[in-house]
Image (cartoon, rainbow, N blue to C red; front, side, top):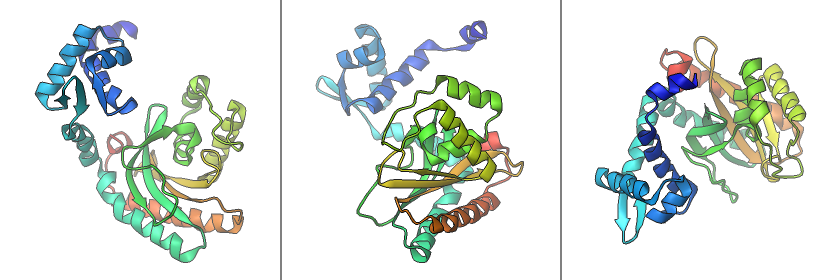
Length: 268
């Protein structure tokens, strides 16, 4: 497999993408020397990549520093416009938030749709409720799959071999005193999600936060995304079922509106 990769892999292209991603992981402005350190490139190579990206319009020069331009958004926009879920779900998310606010006493924060991205989940659509507590989430936000309700839904749809491979390499971090920190406990949580068809991650990522999620299927019943709703933590378990029912109904409406395509195509 590694020999096959050597035949097709374009190292210079990968390095160019790594330079762009370095800005996402660091501050908004970087010098050539800082980029070289972040990417492991020689200074001369880093400078060539920077100047090329500057000529193409993806970077702009600010003295010795370089910064991303809005042209980088075109890369993400190409994905969003090619994904049928993106345009379909926003009105549904707004309606979901409004319904939960109107029919429960829960303090709703937001709703979103996430798709898998290697060991993470990435939100492709998002709706925010009016709340004093604002999460730093938007379309394009990425979170570790294991600690997100959407991630556990997506992980529950994996084959046994895929889940074993994921658990072998994942590193668990304690975010709160409620965070699942053993792989055995995480596996049990994911198995429970697979059995019941929905996930609830309560105070594991943030002590104030409880997040629910359900799968979104395509016509072949492949899980192509996960729909979630986040609320402030509440000990009233009687309201959990109301949230899950509304999530499942919203997911069904989204599924009905997605063009008939395979699961692989639908998620990009």
